[in-house]
Image (cartoon, rainbow, N blue to C red; front, side, top):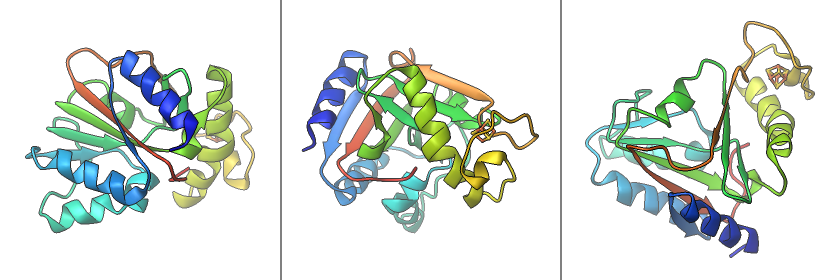
Length: 188
Ligand code: SF4
């Protein structure tokens, strides 16, 4: 297992998160499906990571297709950046994904590939998001934001994707939260 994954797992636990470390995407998928066994309702935030590990397809085949809803037993998403000190950083355009990760579900489960780990501070996390996450997401979603061409221009256009930034210093009160760390590159 990647040393940085073990390091961040320890920091996340100290911040109140349950953590499962997985060597492969298949292990991560199995963990998500195990947690989902006890959930009658499942929601998700848009995530290439969830698609890449095949969990959305698998849940749909089980008759538990994740909805874009927050008042659910289990909400699935990824992180845009995970600092080695255990802080999770997510950005959002309209806030629906990040708000559901704070309040609404009984449990939130993040699936995070090693490519999301950032050795640095908040500025480094935000730089990573605008350099590595926003450009491919803009292209995938057909957006015309400047980053769709590859470089952030701190834009002020209607389709701006980074209107809201949320930093999790600790697990939010009142919900359960687990981070599944995967020693593979997943999502953006
Ligand atoms: S500020 Fe605009 S250009 Fe920069 S990452 Fe956000 S949406 Fe893209």
